[in-house]
Image (cartoon, rainbow, N blue to C red; front, side, top):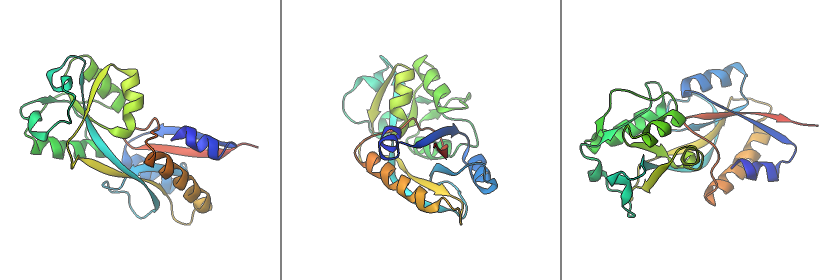
Length: 205
């Protein structure tokens, strides 16, 4: 996604930050962020938005783990009694993943990760398996050795949107950015996004 934005807007500098959804929403309201990529399933308040697209969840396991060895899409029933690592409280992705894992009767481990990067590293180290948002896979799978399996349809997913505060003077420009991001997402391009990534834009002269 970031390469597509660079091609479409070569004078634009995108600065990425990552935080919990509630923190990003507060920063939007305070004007310290221009926009944020958030999941619409979370409580994001009264903001302007442009949908980027669906973000399916995938199963991530250590290399050599039985659940990661199969080439076929994973069924929810395969997670029954599996030891699953999830993010810490306060992350909207935790709530979405927990709902799915509870339905699959998976067992959540007591210790939790503070970020997707930590989560991926813990899984790669053999601590358990986890769910990752598909948009984060290119980055996290590159940082840690993981086996990735998609889920059978209908796969668990969330909806990602670019959001910004109402009456922002950057609204028209952000809509154009969202259109470019949506096109890139639709062609399978993913950025280095995680939990609830945000971006601050700055035009260079």
